[in-house]
Image (cartoon, rainbow, N blue to C red; front, side):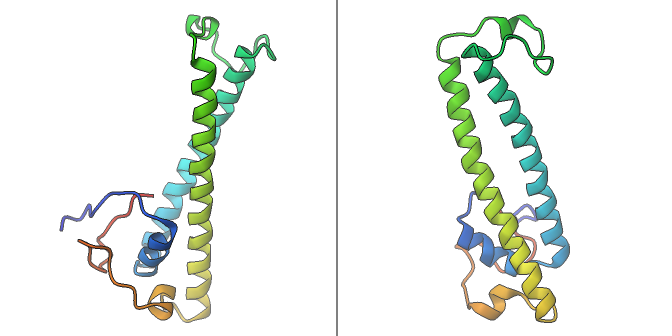
Length: 141
């Protein structure tokens, strides 16, 4: 398998098992990626909420919104698209928060058990089909 590993969405239980088999520096890298994604999604949501407010007529002008022509003329369906995007982003943010919590739990377990992985201690989980238990595998967050 290549160093890039398999990149696909994983359920939270698979995520917990996978991080239990990774070195601590890899956990820190994953945390950084998730936190960066959270920051970008929150910024995107803030902007989407301003667009929604403007379309609904709750805000006349906002200094945070660019004053370009595309913001002055919304097309039919834009409001629904922005609202749907906000809802989808909230689901993704919830999933990211679950992953941050799983990373916190894994780090706490390791610090309390002398650095041993929680998944190696708690389960004898088999690797996901097509993957090995090596640290070279990637998971899609």
